[in-house]
Length: 175
Image (cartoon, rainbow, N blue to C red; front, side, top):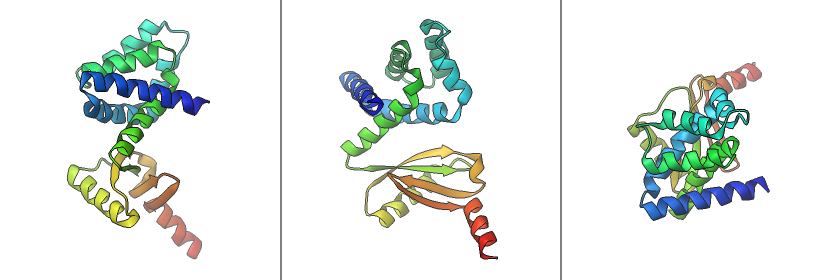
């Protein structure tokens, strides 16, 4: 049921963005919002805190997004918070990105790295993953210091673990 609710919200938000002519901008910004939301327990707790009035939680989100996101994206995030679904904001944003990629005939690959990847690195990685999977790939890069080095990629249910941590573990097991 929760999955249906998330999909419903994602479809609705995409519909509003389409009416405003801002789908691609909203998708890109929602990917960034999902990464920030999923990475910060403090942010998730603040936005989902039912003891705070919805208007205060909306103001927190608007202050965080101010100048960083378009008017449409900011309004949509505010609407999700006002409807009491702030706890699902990351999942809704992820679904928006996934649905946008599917509409373009692509697959989203979540890539976890210890450091940010520049545009050239992202392009080469997307190209390599496309060759390996035979699918058109869109990257969702997540900075995760626990990776230490290398990359951990998830495409659907498939995980490709090229992290230093895993390689060290494999070496330890081999000895």
